[in-house]
Image (tube, rainbow, N blue to C red; front, side, top):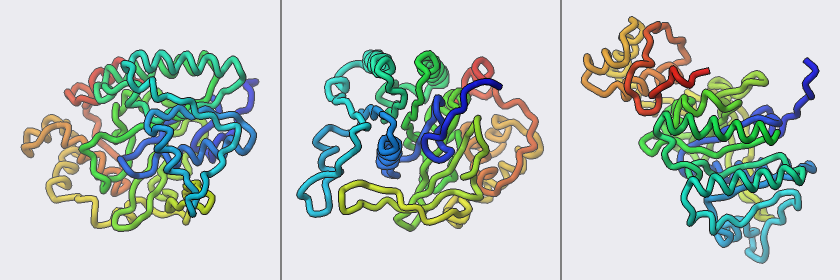
Length: 316
C-alpha cells in the first residue's frame, strides 16, 4: 500500500513501469502510432528511446518530410533513436543481447522509457508457444530489474484477416505472451474506409475503457510539419465497424453451439471436418463479435494448438 504512485504514460493504455504490447496487422499504422506516443511523452519532458528495427535512417527521413518537401518534422530532443542498422545483420540472439546492454546503459543515465519496434526482430520464433513464453518471461524479468517502462510492437500472424475482431489470441505467440504482459492494445482497420480503431485488450492496473463497445476510431493524417498524427473521431462498437464483413457463417454458428454444449475443440473439429485450431479461432471470433459469454467448462488446454502448447506450465 506504500508503493509509489505511478503515472499514465499515454492515456490509460501504457502505465509507468509496465510491459505493454501494441499489435496489429501489416499497414495498420502501428509504427506511426508508436512514434506519436513517443513524441508526446518526450514533449512532456520525459526522455524516451525508440529502438527501431523496421526503418532505415533514409526511410525515416522520407516518411517525416514536411508537406512542401523542404524540411522534416523536428522531433523533441528528449526522443532518442539509436542507429540500429548494423544490428540488423546480427543473429536475433545477439540482437537481443545488444538491446539489453543498451537498456542497462540508458537506465544508468536515468532513461527509463523504451519503445521497441518490433519484437519479431528480437525473436522470429514467437509462433512457438514455449519459445514465446521463454522470450517474454526473460524480457519482463530484465525490465523489472531495471525498473523501466517498455512498449513492445508486435503483429498478428500473416493468416489473420483484417475483418476479424481483435482479441488477445490474434497476437503472435498467443496466450504464452499475453499471460505475462501487463497491458495490451491493438489497432484494427475499419473495412471499406480509410480509418483505423484502437481497442484495449488487457489492463492490470486500471479499468479497460476502450473495449469492444467503445473502440476509439480515427484516421492517420500527415500534418504540414511532417508528423503523422492519429486524429481521433470518437468511439464506436467494434462489431458495427465490421458489420457484414466478419464472415460468421452457419458452419461457425454450428461450431459455437457445439462448444456451448461442452464439446472440446478437438471433438468439434472431428465432427465438422476442420482443424481444432480453426475451431478455436471460430469460437473466439463468435464470442467477440456477438459479445456473448462462454459457458464451456471443458479443459481445452490439452489440445495441440501451436500457440497454446504447455499453457498449463506457464499460465498465471
